[in-house]
Image (tube, rainbow, N blue to C red; front, top):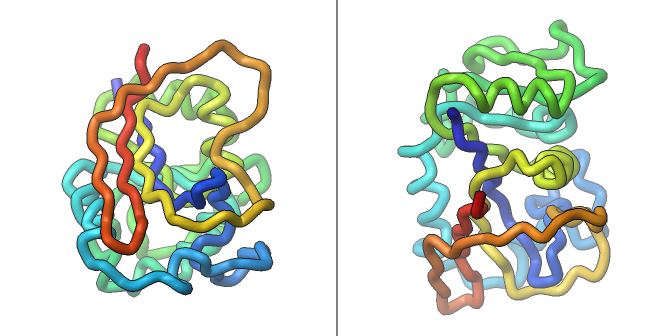
Length: 192
């Protein structure tokens, strides 16, 4: 069975919308990850640590369309080049997939993601994709949350967690660290 890990940036009030401020990110405070905070390299070490555990990547359609034109040529993301990628979308077509970025499979439903998890292989990391992550969280499919929480209140925007009426889900803190610029690294395992 494969683990599904959500990795992302979050404001203190739970917003994960438009952290980089790139194309397609429409939050009025887009780019909040890179603005107004002193750069502390250690705060970003989680991203490097994740590379050793990542055996595949998962995106929603919008995040795929944002990352696919950029990451294949990025030195920072070279380790992801040949990894399998999964895009969860009911609308994306095969001809919209980017060539030269490793094997990419389109999954059409939450059930397809659940079936993928039942297979052999290592951890699949979800990057960006707030709406997808929320659906998978609500369905109980995410096994771990790797979060960098930023000392900013955005007030509005997409949240990682839905407000669905569901049973309580407990998390176990695996690792935490705070940095001088106020960023918190929080890694939680979902209790089963």
